[in-house]
Image (cartoon, rainbow, N blue to C red; front, side, top):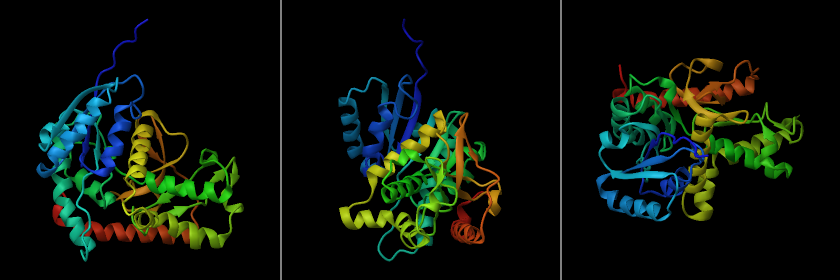
Length: 329
């Protein structure tokens, strides 16, 4: 018996000629985000100088003959890019150059993410979900969200699932157990070296992880290693962690659409929970259900946790000041 045909989901990926997109696009086209019964059409979005390379990526996607792939568009026009999209992966961003101050980097990226947010506001589908992958991801997401006043703020998120996955991997390796046995991991705050990978609530097969690792390992090895893993990979591989970032972006959007298995770290627009200023895009312990990210409530915080969370709030407030001229209001 034939299944009723599902409506095609339009999905935009910016920075389509780049390394992250080169891993990401194949995962989306195979049905990993919306599931094996939902056809997708992809918008490959990039700057004019990169469009020829993006055309080559589109040729490869076409040659992969994905059963679910029903359309491919390559464009640098934002209205075309975001017309009717249900999901947007904002990957393309200006990389930090040697000697560049973080404030200058934020301002440079603001000129990218503001217009993208405005185009999403004007052209995207009502069910649009946005994840910002391009760094500095949290504040880039804030800029895009502020430029889209007609889209619910909760539809804009930043990728901290990569930090979450890195934290799971480090604990799994330390305890020599599969990462699937770990639950209630969280990475608070900003996708930066200030981030706070927190094992306070984490369990392994239902038992507290904190009881199975040394305090010194937790604070002196685990926390800095998770926070600086990207730099470590560049040092070892000679290139950035593109494939794991793409994998985390798929995890984030799939859970958002289909629901998460327990906790998953997502950077969402703060509602004031845990003393985080309302409006900042902040990594929280979240659960995805019925198409929404919900912040896990009612957790007790130690003084150490409060200090680390406060450091992230301060950093994101500073970043927001650096781009204040780009924000609405």
